[in-house]
Length: 204
Image 1 (tube, rainbow, N blue to C red):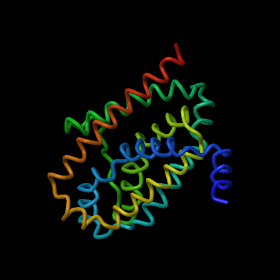
Image 2 (image 1 turned 45 degrees about the vertical axis):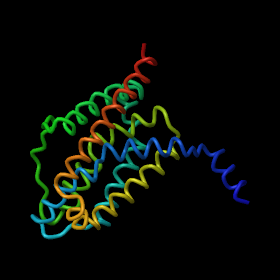
Image 3 (image 1 turned 30 degrees about the vertical axis):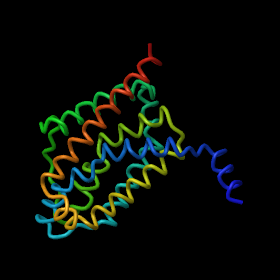
Image 4 (image 1 turned 90 degrees about the vertical axis):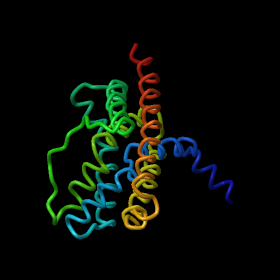
């Protein structure tokens, strides 16, 4: 029975390798662990964070963009490979931010106290431009079902981290958080180079 179930899933495009890679890509881009200091600061400012609300809104945004993002690109005459190449540059500069500790993307907006779990936490910190760019780029290489599972897994991690923010703060410490940010920055840099090289060949 188990083998038949796995066979059915496989026929529907399920691929555990793709799920693993897509999960790591989104995990590196969302960088929820690296955002713990920002989450803590937001919690101190607003008094409370709502993990379920934040996770739900983030999931809605990411899944919605996954389904309509390519259609929107089609309306403006941009192909998925062109967008993937452009997205690789965005990921490249995001990785530089994480590795070098510099600020390239500036955000002047501030979320109000009542909607802090949605803005700026769910958007743009979690379901931001980098994450959306990654989704479009992943669509160029992976099956839809595998990306959906990767999104759900990452949102689950987001919810757990938000629930345990104070605990992570005590255990990891400032030095540990800084190290994690550098490590995931290097991973993201490698991902950006891979996306560029694999899609630029299709265009030329």
